[in-house]
Length: 313
Image 1: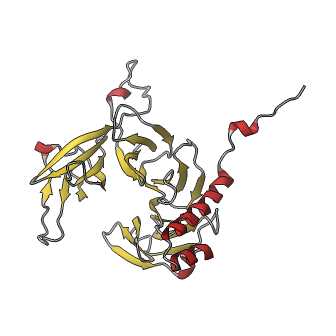
Image 2: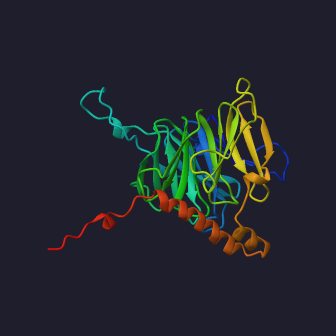
Image 3: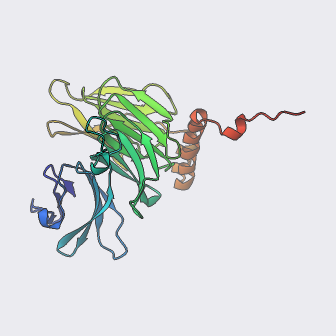
């Protein structure tokens, strides 16, 4: 499924190999009124139909269902403008405006919970069960949010990037970031690695790929490599292969490059290696969770109860 600049949605069937979309929205069946920035597939609905979500600059998060030969659409969320406008007279018009949606990400262990990022740099925790209010609000960035991604090992942790130099890692129950990383260049995209709970990668517009492993170094990347000359193109997307140690990066010229991670960028602990050799995926996952939990324990603020001092008379 593809989101288009004119607000339409196009669904392709690669098995047909016709080059034409099998389904496409139009003004009659509810196309967006602005650029569609992201689309994400969802689990089949209760009737067994394929469905997906889109987020657009018109402030709508929409759910699309493929029913036989048609696309059905239903708005899941309308993103209200969050800031107060002072220079438009006494009457507030903020409630009448919509904030532009930019990014969307569904929680790995709960397909009814999702995060949505906006042009104003806000990130909202939402649910598909009702659209009347947000579950939580994060003042994440000062520029448009480019991407949000949940950690697959500890699903309460997520990472965000925006049209600025800073990447932030969050706990969904905390309104302050746990980690912040300055990449010294505008970030284009960020992604968690599928094989490690503490590894993530990012691309910047100066043509570089940055690989971080928080278990090895909590402050600096373990690798920074230039992929394209910054005068020719800027990197704006990155994704990990789910099985092999490979990443793909996309740039502003429309070129996609495939890169292999060197062994030192995908190092695993002895316990994880042993578990994988024994084909014990559950234990390997538990060790990855423990590894990230130890790091989070170092940066999380202590509970208020532990700060109380008991005075004895």
